[in-house]
Length: 213
Image (cartoon, rainbow, N blue to C red; front, side):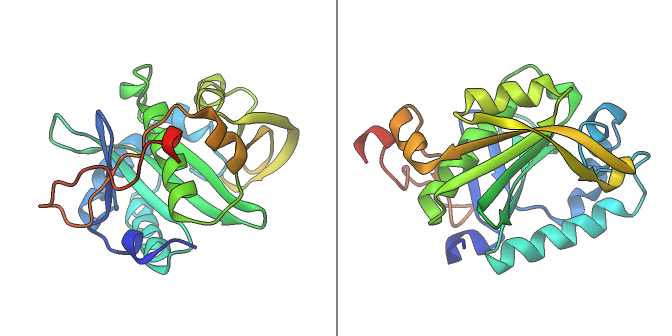
């Protein structure tokens, strides 16, 4: 689904304030820190709370395997101006109708527009580097912050449905959203983040502005 470019662990996306990069084994403690927040876990279907001590290392291994296969793309969010410790996670996972976008952000960095910045970078990446015709996303009906991110990123509300939530030990009500390739192109607002196949390379944007496609 994704090309060789994303299957190398030096792949990253750079936005105005963020680096989105492959997860590494050394990130386990930082992932545990943001995933352990109760208010983060309870807004998801798959993050347990309390967060098990060895959970992050196990999940990082799985994320790296998925990235290497090209079937999906999981990237950690790090701020460009500090020590670049992970503050969140964003991913694209394969589903029968295309790809599903999902993300979590540490509460200590909420309210700054960082989730929206990361989401738009991943949306551009999905449509520019894969052949999917649409992206889907969902969030708990009580997760107004995630809903705002999706709506600001062009997703349209499709309805509400029950979703299996293994980490919540049952079903949760989730709002469903969809963004088609046609809608993405018609928005004509976003720029693709820089794609840097080697950390030492400083490249100009690898693709043109959307309004020139």
